[in-house]
Image (cartoon, rainbow, N blue to C red; front, side, top):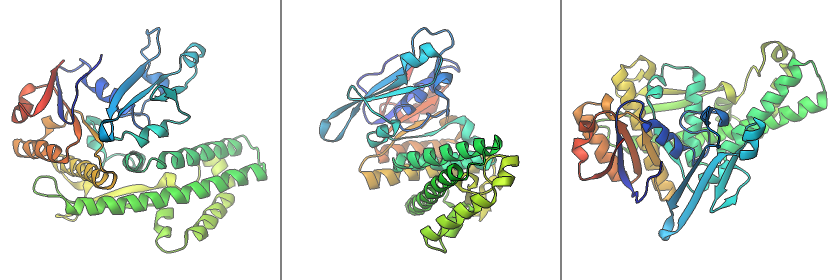
Length: 352
């Protein structure tokens, strides 16, 4: 499937369930840093009976009219070998890391699965926060990868009883360095995003107040980073015996959480109604798009899967107006064409 002659602004995909609307949004999301809106592994994207590897490509209209060709997909050699390797190309040239995509394109999305974000586990909220940072700070994905790789290797060594002190110490040093950088990036980003939220109009999407809850993040506000780095490494060394039994690590930025408060009611998001939670989430995403637009000079691509169906007429109309004001290319999906009557003549429509 291909789409041509697309422009900035609203793009609507309407059609029955199962026709592939979400697949199109996922394809677009794979042209940005990360695993895309489903968080799927490389081989999970591959169709079971397909004899060719999956691939996605797009042409991005850059600054001053320059065209940038982006592409990614499953490595054909890896497919034959049954292994996972993703190829990323920019202007026809292979690049070493998918992080390079983030230098050209950022995507932010809302999916029906995110409706339970504030009720879900801390892991899901942490992943949500880090994805927002990926779109804002391309280096954040590298920090997360370094930390998770070191954590995984350390866990395996401890589980297998390989108490090589030098090896473990090196991995713990890597975890402490990357961990402090991750925590600092989270704190800096949430401060910026909070300012963007406060500056927004709250007539339809309420103000959210939020903070990162985590031992490392909380310590960074009270002590020098180098001191916390040493302390975290020491904690890791002291918890080896326990971590060998329980797995992972007892403390670290992989335990952090994002706490969100409905400001007007001073109520935690998980205690709000379903409609209020949805409005808070949309408000966060819109503020994030405004933040990227103001800081980077261009907004992210917004992918909004089945969002309009869960809003009343007033909020739906407000959402369309805000998206148009931001000037982002915003993809909206829905099963009913009449959900988008307010933007007839103002959006590109595709009935699938």
